Amino acid sequence: MDIAEIIRRWQSGQSIRAIKAETGYDRQTIGKYISLGISNGISKQIKLSADEINSLFLSELNNKQNRSEKNILLGNYLEEFKQLVTQKNNPLKPKSAFEVITKNHDLTSKVSYTSFKRFAKAYGIKKQSKDTTCRIEIPPASQLKLNDKGRPNCNR
Image (tube, rainbow, N blue to C red; front, top):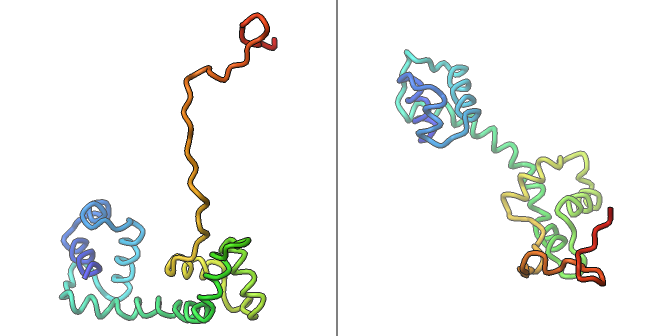
């Protein structure tokens, strides 16, 4: 529905910046959808219904599903990833967990780290944050070291 709205706005003569301001999409994303529409035969003169536009873009969105093959491959090891990253003793960083699993399960040539980053973001795989620390505020110059005459030490 959003893609159809972007195309409709472009066909009505709005600039990419104006479309960005109205829809909130990135200009590169808008440009990509417009280019894809042009390559599928859409122009400013040929106006299609939202359903027709969506059906044209459905094949492109299905191509994104090809990435899901890697997600499925990585998904087989989702629990192992989470365990390595969230274990209490010596948790691994997500990149290190990726390296361990790709090496242990022979995925090195099958999945890129970029694909893993998308996978990790989608499934919330991230290193747990450390305990919170409190900042103690002290008055200015309260830690200033004074010499034996009560004056600040100045090394000149």
